[in-house]
Length: 290
Image (tube, rainbow, N blue to C red):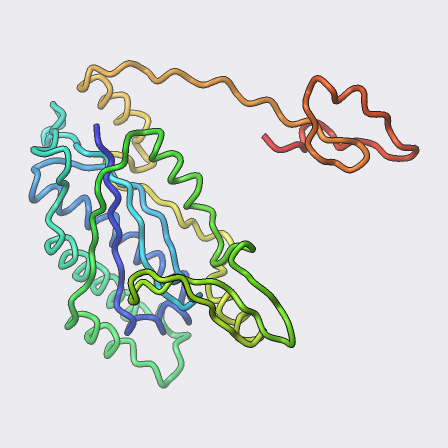
């Protein structure tokens, strides 16, 4: 069964709401993205799809660029729940224009509701939420469906690499000198060329901190037949309908053994030969990475 990668992006006019009311905006964004996939799957495929959504807030130059990455299995339950509905084509999921319009409708509706309930009260007086929402509603929104993943293992590799990134990795930072930070970035508007950006240290920190989420905010959420409430039940039913066996659990990787002198990872067979320095104790096994 193929797995699809869907990316849903919001227009820049909504960035002020994301900046001043992030927990409200990003919750609405994830909810709109997941329900978009479920709603369009129900209307176009007559099926209940499943969807895993991951929030991203940054662009390559650390600008505010809220968007959602979705992983969608290539199929779902028939609306009566009695059979598995496969896709007509293993390379085509849903129409992009329908996805973008439904996403626009849902997110604007959720933000209007948040405004009515006073959840956008932290916005400065210079930012009019109604004007921003209506301005966004008048624009064309972007939805992108990438080609299917190679299989479940590729999905897991993608999630492991992509879900817990921060806005910029150390490898992209070239230098810090004279209160200026130089880092690499890719300019997607210029044929994806690699460039260098120079920012004052304070501006670099400001941009980075825009992407620090509210404590406790959950940026990975599930919808459709993958929703938390019934996921174990629906996945078991999906396996039954597909005639698929239970997946084999891979052997758990044993925790690395650290050198008691420098705490660098050591090979298991040589770990006991390293002498302890006086007064130095290795960390407890339950504290080691797995």
